[in-house]
Length: 67
Image 1: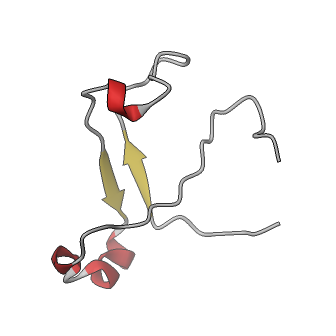
Image 2: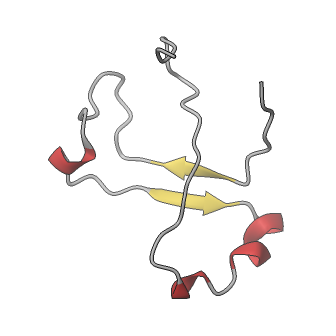
Image 3: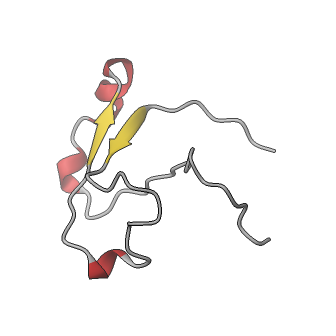
């Protein structure tokens, strides 16, 4: 098991359980990621990158993924 410390929180307009689309390509919904102030300095100059890798934890999931 790996423990991690969140550096921010994701915000989404999709708040009803079961309502989000299975694939994001079928939705026009836009979300935001809020970085906690103490970690913002670590993201300076990210404009030069083409991609960011975001790890997330679905805190309201009721089923575990198959492994």
